[in-house]
Length: 505
Image (cartoon, rainbow, N blue to C red):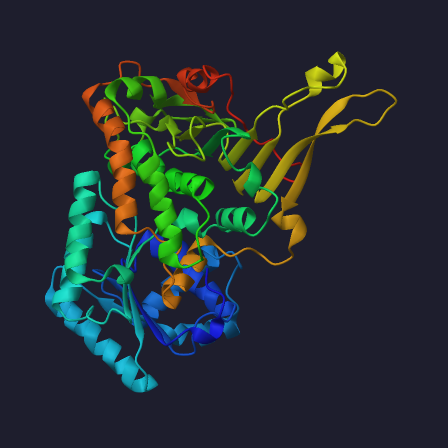
């Protein structure tokens, strides 16, 4: 959420996993686009690391191909690439070998001597989670993380596999780094529409008087995916939808919707309010897990005219897997603002459409004054925040339909990014990498926030692990999930909301 280009100091990025998929698809294109837009300092260096032996030239060619394929700005222009390319370097490294870190230190010192200025150093751990403790410990023991003002370490999700492992990782990091050096990244928080939730809520007087249990009936947060697990079965079978999506992404969205107004926009004040939400959320008893949660696993089916396999038939999948690819949970936030208001969270793979939508449904009008024949077309007001694929915020209200009789219609008051702005929205990783350079932790999770989220979902995870599902797979590809997910919300008199496709989509 940084705003000032002039305050960016010389920076060295050390990317562990430099030859991996995350760097190819997200990090390298994000850094290149920041360079295009003038957000990188004049003095910067990118050091990619990996076990593969590559020259600087070969690594640069690889990143150029990745940028040409994955950058939102399209293929790199020759003149611009010629200016960006000399900042890219490669170092063969064994993350378990302390000698590799000595070499990092030597190269960082060379850059600082060349620039005649101290550099901020960002260690980005784009590697498998089992390497997080090893790399963090070696950075610290090699004296490369001692300056809390200039050294930062970025940790990708998953941050722990459960509450115990999250606490263990937090403890290890806390032994070697100051909390203000640790950037636990959740790319959802870097998305433009997600950031706009705070702007919409706290920069306007319109909604805040209505933003409570007196006017809001319920809240839905849906993040649905049309894709299956593909070749990620090895990772996904040890995670599942609850760990992979709800424990982090969806609970982060819930916190933004439910948090109290912060006193100011400093990182710790914003994160304090998010932790308050997680701590206020009602914990589940085993009986409540059965009543308030749904899990599912996709079977085979057809997606856009193509036959797709079920989860258990995916590459390298366990044919008897009990891992959920769909999860829906009804949460409550037990505080004055939200007491009694249900928050329904839903996520799943191989569903009918890929979309991320937050729906706030307001209560019905207290007294309906219009003729009885208009009642059929009358609907409650909704605020719909669409994160993807459409980026929009729309308020659904009732208005009179043209004509001589009084008939009501639902109309949308829409803020649409594409229709309002001509500039292309930055990718989430561009925002988060820039904030890391600026030392702004507002969009990053703090250790206590991670632990509070794990503490909330652990009763569900424990219950599901103790009870093997007897009916998996229980939904077909291209559906909206298992039928019991509809029953979960229908019992309260509601239904899952799906934003209609825009004509331009």
